[in-house]
Amino acid sequence: MSGEIAMAISTLSAAQTIANGLVATRDQALVLTVKTDLLQKLHEVQQTLFALQIQNQELLQRNRELEQTNLELQQRITAMDEYELIPLIGGVSVLAAKPGNGGSHRPPYFCYACQQQGKKSPLHFEPPEFGDSSFHSFLRCQIEPRHSIAMPGSTTPEDLRF
Ligand SMILES: [Zn+2]
Image (cartoon, rainbow, N blue to C red; front, side, top):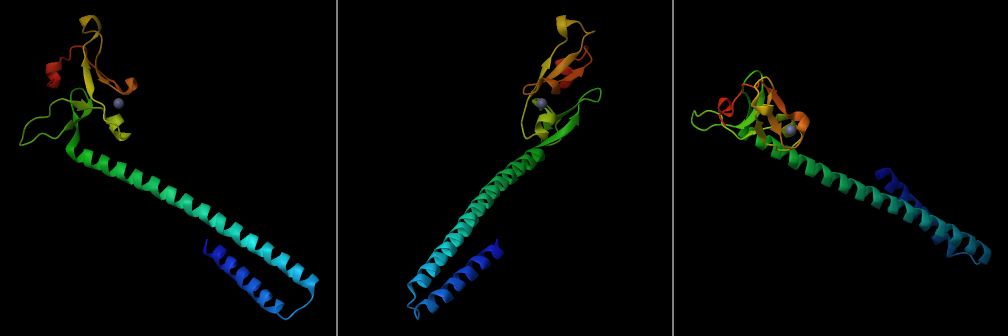
């Protein structure tokens, strides 16, 4: 961008030099030619400045977007300080608030996959279909069904401290 500014300035000083030379001349045709040339150069300078303004706007916009992203990442880091990934049963891991003063982790539990995407989704316990423990019970993600965690059908809410 600074190269373009330097070029715009040198174009303007060239135009100034030509204009100074004009004072001495009485040749109307030459005056017209030089005047046209000056207007052309002025137009080029305006185009360059306009392009620079647009570039500047784009950079400001990009900067705003990056600041917003930074803010969101900071909020996620803060959220991670308050929650931790804990194993429940059978290799199932969920996010839970850090317990105070040596207590144990308790619901609500949150979906780790959603947390990775900056969302906070509580997991709801769902017993096996027909109350038949040969089917799975689930911890259901409230945002994305595919995140739901299957557990042995014999799992009870009490097992998970619900
Ligand atoms: Zn989820």
